[in-house]
Structure formats: C-alpha cells, structure tokens
Length: 619
Image (tube, rainbow, N blue to C red; front, side, top):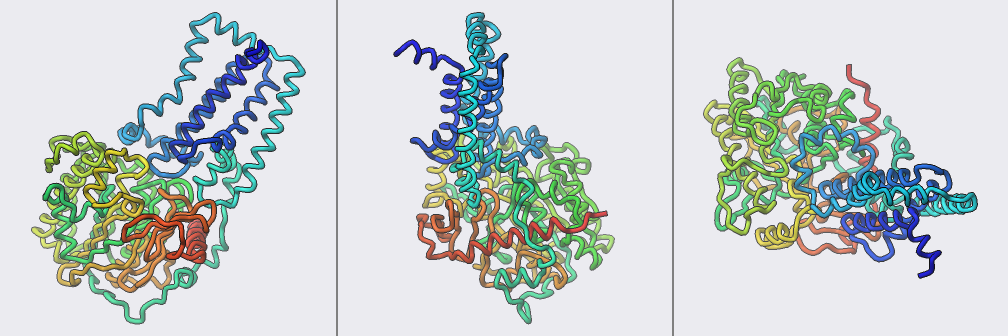
C-alpha cells in the first residue's frame, strides 16, 4: 500500500464512509432484505453529498461536522429499523408527532429492540470517547481539518455530482406507491428528504365530488331495496367492545387441547360471526380503530387520526345516535389525553368519556386499571343509566392485552407448555386468554342486570398484536405448529368481528369480506338509523356479497384485500404479490386481482382524504 493511499484511507472522509456503509448495509438487510451492491448504490450518494460539503466548506472542527452528520444519519437509520419492526413501513418525519407517546409504550419499544441494533451507535460513542481522552486522536483530528483550496474545490465538484446522482435516484421513482420499494430505490436518506420536501403535495380529488353515491359507484355497491336485518335491533342499547391487539387466529385455537378463548368461542356461536374481517388502522393504532369504526372513514396518510382530524366536525355514529335520543359514552382505563383522545372524542360527538380519573389505579396492568376493573365499573355505570330509562351507546376499549404482552403473573389464567416459555407468542397467548376471561365477566354482569337481552353488542379487534416483521424464527415456528401452516400477512391483519342481539339475530357464520370501516354502516342498518345523507366508505355487511378494502399501514400503500386475496404491490402493479385469504403460498401472478381494483383502492383513499380534509372545523 502506497503512502498516498494510506494517507487517503486515514482521512475522515474515508473513515466515515466505511462507518456509514456498515450502517446502511445493516438497515437494508433488516428492512429490505437486500445485500450485494444495491445498498451501496442507493445510499452512498447521499453520504458522499454530505461529506463532500463538509470537505468543501468546513475549515475548522471538521471532525465535529462528520460526527454530527454521522449522528443524524444514524438516528434516521435506527428509527427506520425500529418503525419497520412494528409497522412494516418506512418511518417519516410525521412520526415526530408521536414521540411524546414513547415513554408510555417503552415496553413495546424494548421488545422490538434486538441488542445488535445498538451496534449502529458504537462508532459515535467510540469517537466521542477518543476525542475526550486521547490527545493523539485530537491531534489527528486537527491535522485532518487542514485541507487545501484545490482539495476543497474537488470535493465541491464531488458534492455537486452526488447531488445529481441523488436526483437521478429520486425523480424516476416518484411514482412508486409502495414506500418500501420507493425508499429502496431512492436510498433511505434521499427518501426521507424527498418525503419532507413534498409533504404538502399529496394527491387529492375535488371534495365536492365525494358523495355517498360516488363512493357506492366506485365500490360497485347497489343498495338493497329491502335490506336484510333493517331495524332488527332498533331501540336497543348499543355496546361496542374493542379488544386490544386481538387477532382472529386466537378463536377456536387450542394449545395441547385447551381453548385459548372459551368465552369468545361461545359468543361467536351465539351471534353473527365474520371470520373474514380485517383491520384498517393507521399510525394511531387503537385510537385509529375508534375513529374508523365510528366514522366509516379511512385514516390519514400520515399521522394518527386523533391528531390529524380531531379538529374537524366529523360525521359519526355517536352523532347519529344522539339525534335518536341515545346517550353516547366511551370507556378506557388510561389517561384520556393519551393519543389526544380527549379531542378525538369531542370530534366524534361522544357526550361523555370515562378514563383513568374514573377507574383510578385499581389493579394496574401495564398503564391502566385491568380489564376486570374496566368491565366491572363500566357494567355498573351502564346499569345506572338503564335504571334511569336512558338508552345508550357505549364503547369499551380493553387494554390488558397490550403489546408487549408482559402480563403480571397474578393475571395468568393459562399454563402453557414448556416450549412457550419466555417467547413472544407465549406471552401473547396468555394475554389474550386473560382478555377473554375478563370479557366473560362483563358478559355475566350484563346478563345479571338484564342489559344483555336489551342490547346490540359488537365485539371486534382493534389491530394486530404479532407483527410478522418482529417475530423471531422461534416465534414463527411456534405459530406454524399452532396453525398448521406458516403465519402470514393475512393472519396478521385478520381480526374478529362478532355481532350479538339476543332474540333478534339468528346465529350465523357469515363469509362476507369486511373491514373496520364496515362496522358503522352495518350497525346503522340493524339499529334502524338511515345513512342517506352520510358519506361512508364502508358498507353494510349484511347486504353485501363483495368488498374491496384499501390497506394503508402495516403494508405498503397500494395494498388491498378483495374477496379472494391480499395484494401487495411491488415497484408497480404488475410485480406485486398476492396472498390467498384461504391460506397457501404467495403468488406473483395477479389472476385474482385486477389493475382496476388497484386503482379503485387508491382512489378510495384519495377520496376519503379529500373529504375529511375539507370538512369544516368543529366549534
């Protein structure tokens, strides 16, 4: 090795290039599953652009400038890795609005944090340590800061060249709707910059064209002249139970012969059960489920609905029911300010809410009173309204089954075989077994008070609990053993929906495809509440034989579910993959989807965004 080459390799430009290369290779391996030259070709231009500017501009404290750029890029890569491990998509600057929630869900963060991810910060700590305690290193840093005018000009040319290369990576890939493919092609840093600079240029439609009739035409729905179930539960109290992180695969599941969810297994045989029902939440998870279920609108493209839409005068189920004389209320054992719920509930039109101030710190589980306390105190409150002759619409949001499912030992109701010890899947099963047990107490209390027979009860999951992206090989093996097949995206997004109206609805298993946006229209039909003047993006499941569900989070944009498959786009429609809802291996042929469905799903999202964005502000 020549002296000149050794000198070049010892310069900060070369040293930090090698350090950053290791980081974007780690990120690419975790998020994109890519290796070879792809990460180098996509990510190196943005790194060299920043480093070239440092060499061309900085004359002093050059090492500090390199270290700062390293820190910024490292934080971006780390955030991308961690966000992907839960949501399965690329994080953007919009997630900064959720930073305040991190302390509340720190247990979930630690569960997703693989120890080797922290290696991404090692060089930053090492360089800081050397700077503080090694004089020889400081002398090297001072010498490295001396760059001649000719070298500065050369690096300025390099920076300009890398800017041109970065633009060449970004511009041709702007039309890709799949964020993962877009970020992979552009490079992570380029993608983040592009997203920030184009944040105000999202695709919209004329809000005046978004009408109930337009949505029905786009979805291919013809309203039934004499709807099945119309008014079947009219005049009844309405109770929604939203089960935290509850997936449909838990129903009828047995572990060594023992039922995981005996209560729900019984209830689904007593009411209408929809086994092909899927989540449609966004970044807000639980609060997004509350939003979509009560509005039949889709979540925003970025950010939680409770933050983005809480200032809007939202058309909603609570408002429609209040107009028919219902008292509307919602129950959640955590602080109502968490996820901006206090503002969301006002926007949705709930008359009252009950949070930690009502439930107190009794029998704490995770960050609120246990589900047993939720159901006991709620049942007492509902009985009080009933005794006054007040009809009510009440939503209950359970919480004890919250990620990362570290249920206190005192709440364990199910002993699992040794193979589940210290596994995420085992913790999930125990948590949902407890959630099922607590729900059974609520059912018993409603029956004892007589409310059960006089109510319409809707039980559904809010979102998935086991992100496929964060499962270990051991977890996937355990799930495959339980399911008899590999766990896939269709399992992950599949949540339960059970509708009960004792004495009014005959028990049935209904094969219709449904999503959370369909709950409001279905309940409105059963309750005899007309939706003629209300824009809804869901449909009444009792009077529909076909459906199309756009999926926005947990899978890339452009994903959708039709009556047969889950579709996930590639860099374009033609290279997407389909996952059969009935199980089986994913395929690359779109024989069960059409480009028209792909475009309709995207158009439905645009219509919902435009409609909601242009609603008047609430008073």
